[in-house]
Image (cartoon, rainbow, N blue to C red; front, side):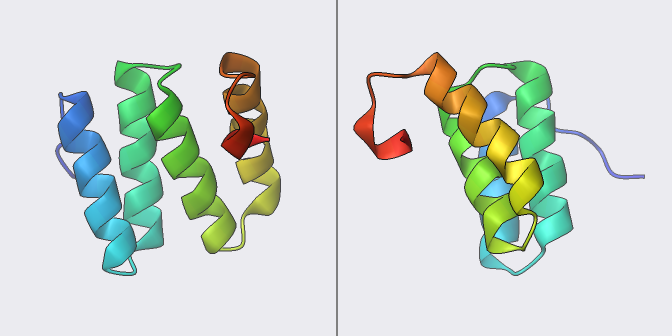
Length: 79
């Protein structure tokens, strides 16, 4: 069993590094850890959604993109 990061920044950074190292499940798990720390964090929602899309999990990604648009309707790039 892996140790979960207790910092939002650590979870997001480790998720990014896991994505870059082609470890999709680890990245996704880390982004979910980040969401447990701060459930409505726009950066984490975006990172998780794009990672899910990149690894073929589009239906799961869509719900996070929708949450992001709901949270930040003023941001054109999330539409």
